[in-house]
Image (cartoon, rainbow, N blue to C red; front, top):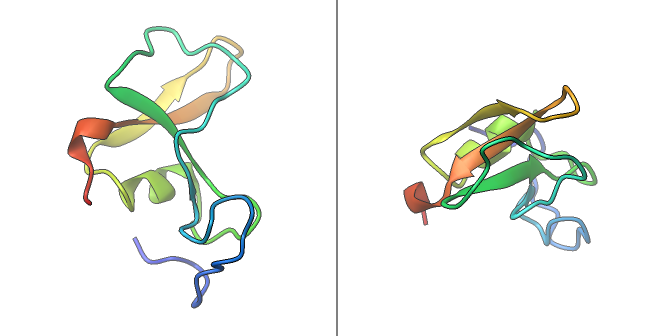
Length: 84
């Protein structure tokens, strides 16, 4: 996916410039969550990606939305499928 902003914000304190917060730690419980899966979020400070899934696919081939116990959704990525 192409970042929404043309420039990478290298000085961003939320992500150190890559637009991705990984590994992220949600404050809720995700049933069945275990390694090798990790929570990935887009950086809400610099907003380089449209959503968490776009951010995850910038780093991993396999990622998707998963429901949490509180009724929300989070993106989990299989860390074995890293692009780098």
